[in-house]
Length: 313
Image (cartoon, rainbow, N blue to C red; front, side, top):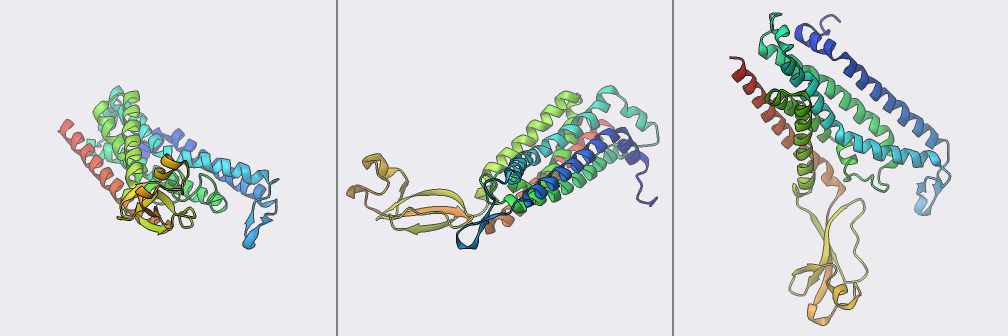
């Protein structure tokens, strides 16, 4: 066991921030207890049978309703987790020591600047990775029950991050960005804000672009009845097709006749279409986005070490 114990600057880093480590452990344990309790409460009420042999939660099952609400908030929390991790690394872990000058004490203990910085980054990355993996596993406890319900589909923001690999990549990116900006800014609060902003911008940008990584699938059909996305698909676009094969907006007929399907003859509407992503695109999209984020994390970490060496030659 002694071989697994932290030593040198790694032990010092963990010791300095032991309160944050214990707080993360307590939050993880509380999350497990809450979701496990809600699942037990939900299981105490029998489901109601509906058509085709399916079952749904009964109307008087308050446990299911609270479980759904808890999972919605849990998804939001998982998306915000990289921002919290990055802010902590940038501020209390790096910038505060540089701002106050206490890092010089570590350098008097036979630690080189690279050893000091590497210990900070690797300890933070290891702790953040362990907490993230634990939270992903805990999220799965509730996900199996509520998946597919309103705002809890595989493609929704929150469940998408919390049921795949991208959250791990974003947390590692946050550590790398925090390590870089903590050195560049050297002011605790400003470094925390800047890291949260950069990490949030990357989250927002890739969240807007992720459904362009893979080509959509298209289904077409006659003008009536209304065309729906295949089961569990994510609709990207829908509209009309005229006789020349040109795509027109979905509302083109309604604009003229106040009816979706009563189309003027001059429009020559021949069919309708729906572009969508099937659920099978979940893992390919996850892996592509994970690779992009890890590449950005590697670049940020490389830049962080370059800055370190430039300032401590």
